[in-house]
Structure formats: structure tokens, C-alpha cells
Length: 205
Image (cartoon, rainbow, N blue to C red; front, side, top):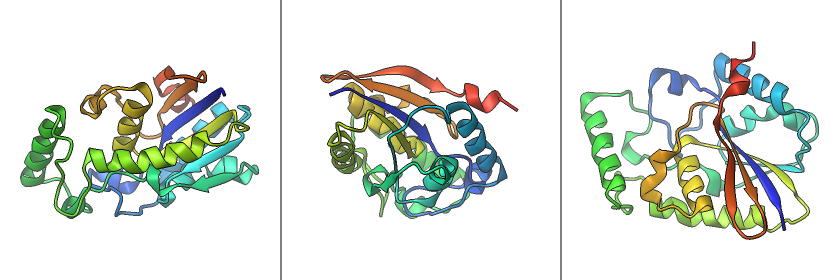
């Protein structure tokens, strides 16, 4: 079985713009810039013969690929694609205190402490469990050769580690911005990234 995954992060929300922490528990809408990004992505990739789209349970992912859905592309929501939950920090503006807390947890993860998490939040290891369930669903349809996946920044980094067989501690090797693309090809045995952090479509007027 061969399959091509076009994996994108959702478009910009007002929380993204203001630096407010989102996560799994905050269900925000795209802002004007995010809707523009969605149109730019659609304009660049509307001719790709997608068989299906998979999105998280959060509406910002659905809004990011809405033009494809309006054209009749079938889709499925998978909560396994949701963003990592940041727990007590969700909905907070950046402060010196929570910036320090984030810096510390990122160090933990970089050091391989992948069970580390904020109160009320999720660890990378916990996210991996639900992502593998979501991936099982996506890969269980051999008839879907070309698939669009819209998800979230931190979650996308973790999924790319899983797909490429890298430890989750290397998640920061996958940079991203709003509505950036990673194209991943499965050849029947392994996944390979063939388009890395592509933002060319966002440069179109």
C-alpha cells in the first residue's frame, strides 16, 4: 500500500497573533489572516486529487481546509489529531512566569523526560498514544491514496517524529508556522518527508 499525506498546521487564530496559549482545551476560530492563509493554501493545492481529509476535533482545523470541504472533499474528525493539552496554562497571555515554565518543560522533553506535563495537561507520551490510534484509522483505508491532514503545531511535531521513527525528544527539529505543509510519502514499508516545512503558498498574493 502506498499513500501520500499532506500534513498542515491550521491557519492563524487571534490567540496565535497575541501569543496566547491555546492547546487542546481552547477551541478558537481563525482570524482574518488565518482565513486568508486557508484561501492561499487552497489556491495552491486545489488540483491535488485528495481522496479524503482528516482533521482534529477543534474547529480551527476544519476552517483551515473549508474550501476543500465546500468542494465536496469527504472528511473525518479524529480527536487523536488534537493539539497537546497545556492544562492550567491554556488561555493565558505570556508572562515571565509561564514563559519560564514552558522553557523548563521544553528542556525536560529535550532531555527525554517525555512524561513531563503541566497540571491538567498532557505529556508527549500521552499524545503519542492517541496519535497512533488516529494514524491507525488513516492508514486503514488503502483506497485513499492521497490524504489531507490538518492539525496543530506541537501535535504535528510529535506526529512527524512518529512517522519518521525519531524519538519524541527530537520534535523541535520540525519547525512550523500557521498553515505550513509537510508532505509525507508511505511506500508500503516506511514514511519519508518529501516536502519539509513548505510555506511557498503563503507568499502568493
